[in-house]
Length: 290
Image (cartoon, rainbow, N blue to C red):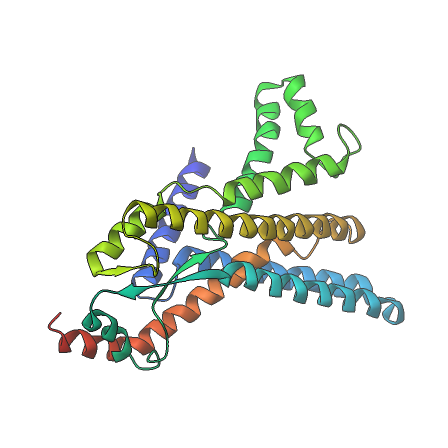
């Protein structure tokens, strides 16, 4: 009970700090705190790897270069998955609404559009899949059931019992892909209603039901390719983590956490850009009496 009390108090404290960071406009506070924790873990892992490889410097350079190269490729792929989007151009009914965007410094040559991100959920599909695969192990330890023990062994690629490792990786990629294409909020309908309110529409598409159907197709195709890219990134990173953990006596780089780091840094950069744009945006809003 004492341990639980301290854990709850610590979680509430961290939540309060995260909310304060978010309220002050420095990105998502929880993501930044998790990012700092991951980067701290990276330093410890690199320290262990250097100590392990220090005895044989001549033969460790290919391994180090391979790890750095793979880390660079995974980071670039994570940036593409995080920032990739399909832009749907907009057309305003009145020239006054369209000219509002040109009053913001640096955006005079940017056409209005709706971005459909290929990975709108960020790291959530990967985290949800990891928790889902850990659920049989938790049930096996609580209930002592032989069935859940077999399921837990089948979903553990690092054990020789149960299914082959490719079964785990296939199921892992499938669930990451499946969770990425879900649309709980029905975004096409909300976007269509918002376009009607601001006096805008998609060129050559009728407002209303036709716009909803068109945006639904765009979102489905975008999330389809985003789910494929995210599942490949997550599965490849998991395979590399398991391989490095087997080679390096139980510790690895943690390639699956790269997406969290990339997302947090990009969010922090967007917050800085928003601060930079706010003075010009305030002048444009005051000019139109808003």
